[in-house]
Image (cartoon, rainbow, N blue to C red):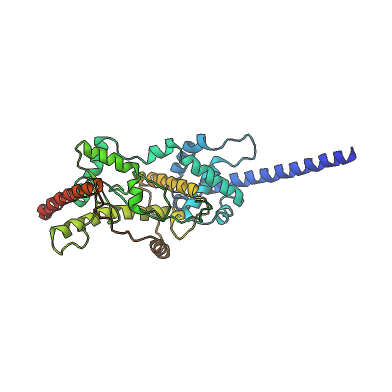
Length: 359
């Protein structure tokens, strides 16, 4: 009986010790949360990329999706979101973020916060609100007119590209304003661009629009297959020829997607290819989606883009893969699609050449 009493007393002491530690952590979290919101606006944006107003809006939007607990010592939604934004923005490993002067969380708490907020940002309500492929004719016309006015290239609905984001080895087998209208982070880094495109639902959507007689397309580099709805540059075009003129305008226009990726990674440096994300591939895919959502929020409110150090730029570029030319004829339907793609591209070549002095 005496031993049982002593054991109960020991357990009670341990429970009070844990409760005291959790209470201290909550107080520290609330104190650091207040510190963050008291930062000057410019410094807050430098740390978290969002303005204070947008941060508060984001917390309120995510609140219904974040884990609820009855514990009095729970980490607040605001602290979780601050921690996650800081992790996305710096690309630092979890411990430095968790031990920064703004959010006194241990590494395990940081990991839980990042996962929880990332999952919340991948709910359909959030993703479809901020990343939307244009569905109506009016939405499509707005984008098409934007590209046409800026670059003189007709019919462009968007530009397509792939980029690598590093993660630990798995244990098993703009439009013209640089907005992201579709993102697919479900493929591994060894997957060819053309394969990803063939398995992308957007291709089916564009193909259906062409069946309805709409002359619109995406612009891709030579790593993508030429199609009536996906125009690629003309490799080794003759100097001063209509083909070269087309290719120059194509590359200038398609550069918007490369700038978009550059801005995305300048804001959210966890995506830089030389900074390895220590999560499984499913969580990394969700982090990419979450950063794309935040990128569009920043663009909508015209928030400044932080300068990416040249070492980070060079490190990311060196980790990317040069696209392989994908213009083989193939067989059957593939050959027919390639022929139709060339015919469509030839029409654009002649149109751009005939209007070149008007641009």
